Amino acid sequence: MPFLIQPILVSTRYLHQCITPFMLCQKVLPYLRKSDHAAIINTSSVVSHRGYVHHAAYTESKHALLGW
Image 1 (tube, rainbow, N blue to C red):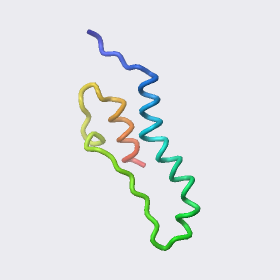
Image 2: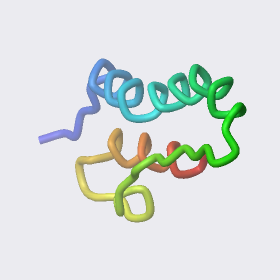
Image 3: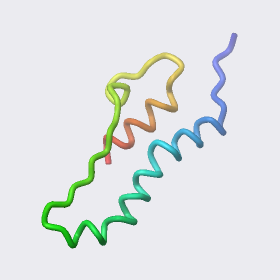
């Protein structure tokens, strides 16, 4: 059985787990700059350091979030 990656799954997962946090941070940045104690906390997963079989899209999106 060949391993197939479904492009729609990859792009949807990447959008939800990587692009959305970036966009959210851009939107709240003006408000955070007004505070003396502002912080952005993004949660990730051990998968961002260690990939798992058949989880390439998830691993890639978590690693992108970690690298940002």
